[in-house]
Amino acid sequence: MMSAALTPATMPAVPPPSEPLKKLRLLKKIIPYSERKLRDMAAHGELPAVRIGHRYFYRESEIRTWLDGLSERPQGAGLNTG
Image 1 (cartoon, rainbow, N blue to C red):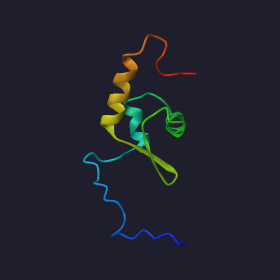
Image 2: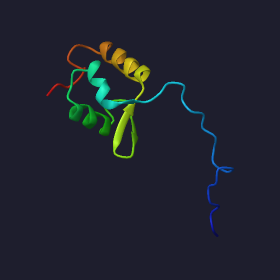
Image 3: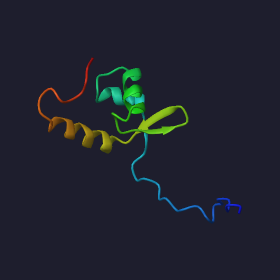
Image 4: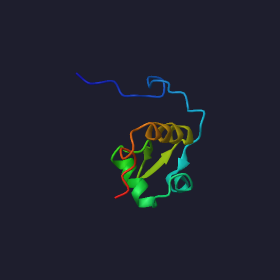
């Protein structure tokens, strides 16, 4: 039995997000880490990001929410700076 190929007519409709994706290197203005550290964090799921090809992008609102969540953690349970 052959599976049906996805065509524009059969693909699920996903509305585009209202907030644009930003380059990960711009995140250094909010989080004082190197671009490599931020990329590694994104790759390991430690940072909310979207991977497109070999690059990572983020939405500022998701980063702000993520940072707010870190500030609610007990002292010492936040970002690993090592």
